[in-house]
Length: 101
Image (tube, rainbow, N blue to C red; front, side, top):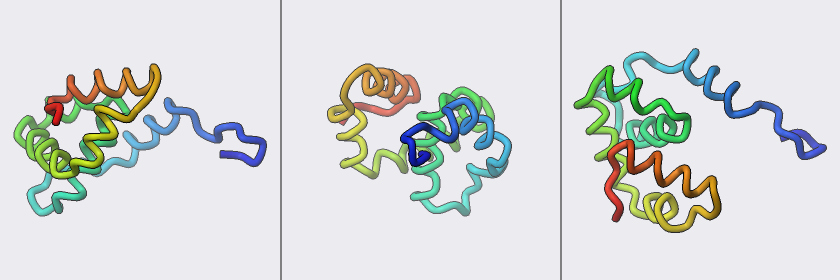
């Protein structure tokens, strides 16, 4: 964010940069659970779930399982994200395959 409180990069630009620099082997079995959880969270937030799920359904399931190991984050996603943005996020999280705690 700039000093004048304007956003430097919009969501579309962040998404494009993330796609450009993402590790193609993000679902490698050697990655730690925390990295898989982070990757799943980012994919959900950046509306990239279908892309990853179609590449590796088993890897996506493992990443969701890793994300479900963070109950405080799930609580925020499902219960403490206000407004329309929170509603949109909840729809995306459910569509990604996470179960409401």
